[in-house]
Image (tube, rainbow, N blue to C red; front, side):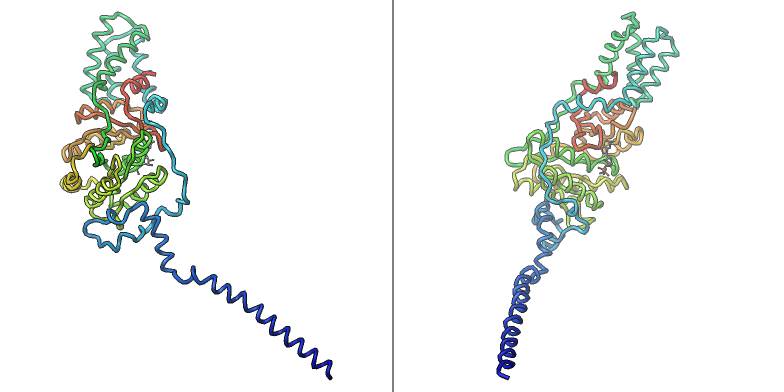
Length: 397
Ligand code: GDP
């Protein structure tokens, strides 16, 4: 009996000690879980934080938006694709046009090769000259410049009395260079004014490559040693702001954006420049809405953006983005924008996808404003400062 009592006692002790041991980890686990479990609200703030890093609280809101909306992350942020990527250092922009000139191969075949074979055929009669003019017009050079070039070439070829390929090519090269305009000032003005950043407005119709150009331009400037802030004033397309953030994240730049679609673009532009001033960046690039709804609407929108931004000082560049593949349609767009706002430079995108490189000549003639940058591909560093010599050499092969 005594033995039975001892055994029962031991079992009791084991049960008490074992039960305590089993309960203890559970209690510890509960304690450990407490901090992450306790502030689910705080986790929400944490997700908002990275967004805030790219969209600083104060400048982000449009004038009408209450401050509380500022920290709310955008509805579909680009966060999933942003697992802290390494910041890239883009290459300097100098010499890009030369490096990328093979991208103009389609223009070169349709233009240079066709012209050279006609000019050196040894049979320069009236019909051949008409064909030459047609080649120039087909390349979107425009009827006026084409007629001018043919008449000049006719005299030059006659005087030189040659059908030698190298000599004819040299004549063509000089004439083309003159048409393209070797003397235009093609500088992209992005130098700060004391403690105020340079301001570059980027305008153009949706689909031309406007937002992509803003991202690529930021890389061009950063590659050339400048600091940049991007303003997502195309508030009618939420994807545009997300797109800009993706570009900016890669190069460690900041984006100022609205917290909601349809916010006042002028407010975003203003806040972007304000943020640029307070952060001491060299240049602020503002992406604008590209809806060509009505001329008055466009005029109101761009006019307001420009006026509001000018409260900080002058706008250094108004760059019009045109899709080189759209030909006459692109020229029509150029005309409308030029009536609405003072364009200071043209960015001709998708020049890699067209045989119509002559558009460079036509659009400059149309607006009296130089092509300053050209898009030669979809790669991040496929935006090049326009170099007339490299362009003409690429056209002639
Ligand atoms: P947005 O609506 O004017 O802002 O146009 P996006 O910037 O969204 O660009 C429209 C499309 O054009 C995108 O697929 C770009 O990758 C493409 N794109 C932009 N620039 C170039 C270029 O120079 N060459 C080529 N091939 N595609 C380009």
